[in-house]
Length: 159
Image (cartoon, rainbow, N blue to C red; front, top):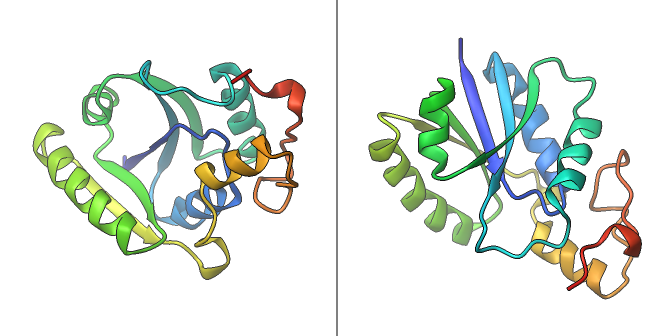
């Protein structure tokens, strides 16, 4: 069985993330969209909210599972039997960063392969970081997040 893990903080999930997963579905038997828990990283939305969002967005995709993990992504992949990591590339900076991480994951993850998909042009400007900044500034993010989720000031973690 070809299992891929799409790791991230998904703080929040964006339309770019959704596009990537849907485009990758024909390549794998299962894609696990997994929130990596990093105690050093301050998130805008709590873990339970982000998990709920992922479940809502992918509820009609039988090949997609939602999970969370702590520690190294490569160790998580080994633990669950995933041989592939799914990553998206928006620009050259993403490529330089992701290339280095994929090489390390290949060593640490016992031949874990990273599969890169280049973002479609309509999503190449979208990142969770930019969406978070818009949210903090009370901007309208509806064009950048999946229709299945809604963000209001009450769902934000106080910062």
